[in-house]
Image (cartoon, rainbow, N blue to C red; front, side):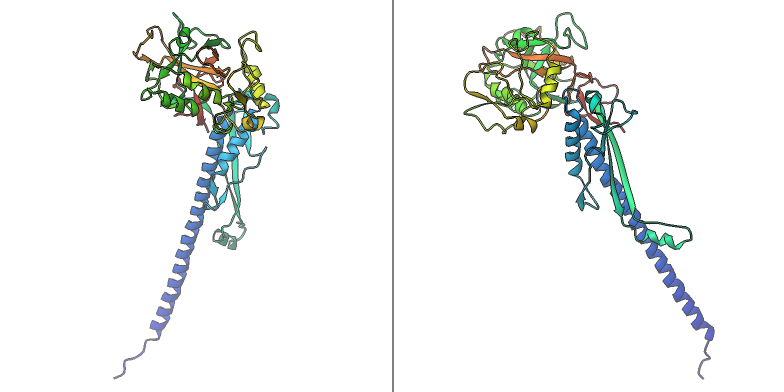
Length: 411
């Protein structure tokens, strides 16, 4: 016998199919929705990375030691920020000059563009980078527009970061140490801001107790000292380190010292082989009779990228780099150096001494004959002093740290 048909069964099958299709569409919609939300999160992360890089790099220029520091800071920030890609790593971030990078004297103060803040440029200590990525398409999210009263269009993602110079727990230093004065104590160890410290390269004289060439842990050969002068110094140097006086001849370091002034020999590498400071303008008793407090003049010389002024008059075929070479240079004559007790470092001494604190100094002049020509430093203050002008590379140490200043995100 032929089984009886059930008309209701077909209708049930059709209803299940419709429900399945509706559920599948709904699930696909949720997946698409999640993908677009994820896309926005990725865009936010990409943009935040760019803002962080921009602010960190820009803050390194806010030393108060360069009359055009806001222009330098903006250049640093734009260069670093644009190295980051957005749009799912598809394009460089957009940073508009004199708009997206702003400056303030305090963290919670009013942030201004470099043009608006020009009158107080040297007082600016905080930099904010505010970046955006506009017109991010969100096709699936626009399904919400089907609901009454809803309007969803292309989305703009924004990110912001603020950075300044903060105390470090490790930093970079040149292979020189400032000797504390007898009976002195932190933070200045007997020195006055603006005081000149005069000496020579000769390791036997070793600068008559004002400052000495030293070996850092792991660095005990002249070739290593040359590399430190050419680069950023010994980095990852913590206050717990101990130093020993350099033994042997350090006269060969003179060309590496002079590079920082853009002063090069006829027979040497081209003038742009190593970066000089933004200015090579030098100081000694002939052009700066007071022999103190040249820092303010130096800050202005940096703004015009003044080259070496033949002070002192060096023999042996030394030449000044061009203004253009200095304009492409960097912060090469302000250095953070450790304070030590040198009283036990007599001739031939090899005993180590702990780092007592940090000094910020300005390199004053190049030298030709290291045994006879004086080299000079101007004491700018403790390395941790924000107004001293020094900035190094290293790890931020938080509010309780006492090291020289390093760029750090603060917001």
